[in-house]
Image 1 (cartoon, protein in one colour):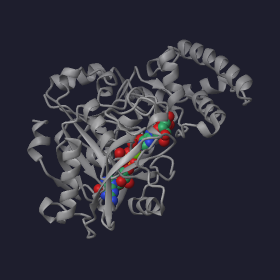
Image 2 (cartoon, protein in one colour):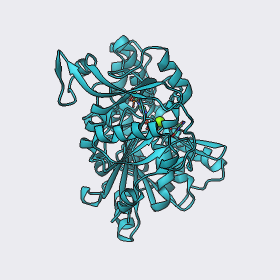
Image 3 (cartoon, protein in one colour):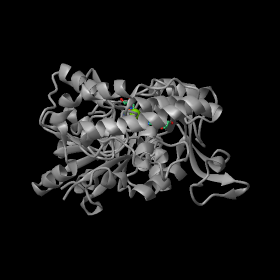
Image 4 (cartoon, helix red, strand yellow):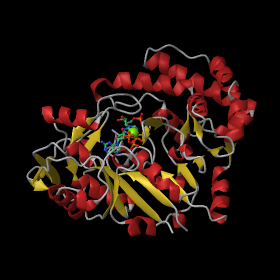
Length: 434
Ligand code: GDP
Ligand code: IMO
Ligand code: MG
């Protein structure tokens, strides 16, 4: 038994892709459990950079098998594009990529509804990735979604698409004054892809059960992060899936009793892309400086990410909700030039300390972060591979993060490449895996 979840402990883009790439050598299967191609997971191998959106990052390792679980939403056209792009790089997927027949499909009307609703929200918009993610999960919950298995039953597929387009067109034309969609065109577009998708579609929950029975080890690759989780995040400024570690079970059909450990990934600071409360956001030019040093632009949409200081209340919350066993702290090198580095150790609201993460975004929007300021180390950490090599002040900063969050730090990332990593508690991480 040695199955582990890698989960985002902040607002996304923490470096989960790098961590999955780094750790997947010790696993046999990498499984995505939620989200869709709103994710952008970057892996740097030498001078080559890969950004994975929908297919698990493990696919870059030829000996790994990969699963897109039932909790993921799949844009079929996008999936086939990602497959073709990987094949063009010489990466073969046949026989090692398995897509759940229970996963829901993102269709053209989901994207159209998302564009219309975001536009209608005006300055209250979520700032979504416009990938159709939210509307697809809406249909799933409304029990009107189209699933991968429907692709193989043309009559069911036809009926579902025609029914859905009728409802969506009513919404689009009356409520949003947008153009109606052509159901037949959408059906034709999807039907043209069926044969290409067929070889990958299977009952992945059954497949994973068989893999575990055969002694294979599974690494669950979370997308987005706990603060964007539909239930536990900064609602309504969230994504529409269970991005927390709990989602690994519902999103793959692997039971909770088979999950052995959770690694939370967090930057040494914080970022957020899109709208919503972000208590430690740096609104001075320093924010822009960190954005430039950290290359903080969305891997999916290219949007500038908002930058802020490390947020202990959010990290502690992430630790509790996800059951994080150990943290991986990334991008410490981005802070190398700073004279001082504040850490938000708590929130104050209306003159009192908040003990728990507030439920209302309107409260989180108005909390006052309490900062503890640490001296910067002002020397390069890029590429360091041992704790001893880190400047003392960087070690002190990391120790403070660990003490304040009450979580052990098992890994420190000092650069985008696989080998730019310090493994602090190998026994702790790998103890979860043997
Ligand atoms: P993910 O969505 O959590 O996989 O993260 P993203 O790939 O969206 O964003 C993380 C970015 O930081 C990518 O460009 C990575 O190549 C890069 N990165 C990861 N770890 C480090 C690090 O330790 N230092 C630096 N400078 N960049 C890193
Ligand atoms: P990875 O896996 C950061 C954000 C969007 C928006 C909100 C809802 O790379 O960490 P959606 O399109 O999902 O309905 O948008 O969620 N968002 C992400 N932010 N990293 C991601 O993925 C994200 N995926 C969605 O910016 O605020
Ligand atoms: Mg990302």
